[in-house]
Amino acid sequence: MLFLHSFKNPGLIIDIVQDVRRLNLLSIRSVNTGMIILGGGLIKHHICNANLMRNGADFSVFINTASEFDGSDSGARPDEAKSWGKIKKDACPVKIYADATLIFPLLVAQTFAKHFYK
Image (cartoon, rainbow, N blue to C red; front, side, top):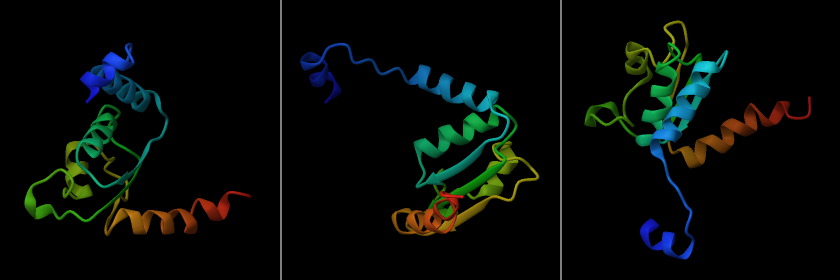
């Protein structure tokens, strides 16, 4: 589809290497980092790897329905990410086994939204 789109709208450039470099550099240059990962797969992989470049994320919340038993990246628990250095050893990460489309709005309503006007 992108191939066909490029004829109608020339100039579109997708550079995955540049995207990974930017994400990793953003992580490296940050004083603190946190991860709220909805679902898993490729996105979880790259965000966790970016935090590996800075010796781990300070905060981490994974929300997905995947279990660790199928061997997928999505199902990996936070302690696995700690063992690789993607989450700091002294962090208290959380994995919520639930549908992110249901849980994330509730999480935002009970945390960030309550303090928005303070």
